[in-house]
Image (cartoon, rainbow, N blue to C red; front, side):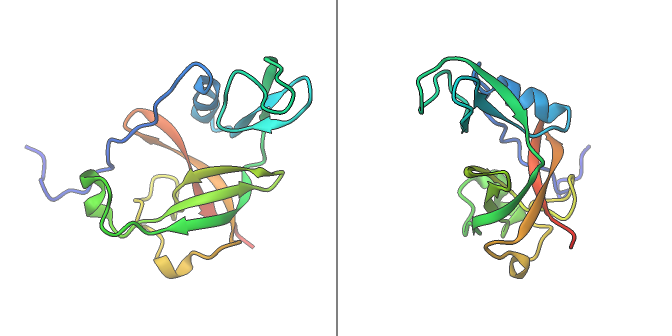
Length: 151
């Protein structure tokens, strides 16, 4: 019988659709890629079938460096979802990508890829902190997470 006091990762997984499926496939390979319009070159996230800039339906997926900076963050109190109560307080961050400042991804800052969501003390977070993407499997899906970039 499983130990009822053991900490486990919540089972909230992303919803995958046809437009975003390549994002998750690349994440499984440990790559951060963003959809780009092949007609005008603009990056777009979240993924969608039509470019909002030129209305082209042609796109590809460009590999990003995985570097960025914390654009914003929050510590939910109390947790919005009961499955996360055990890990509170934990952070939710918005990361602005280094090579694409208009592209921002939501995630969590962690001490290591498989570390719990509450592995970074709240006082270590600050707007503008440099971060690097890492990937972890959560409930069968590989998701991007973020670690502080080493100076």
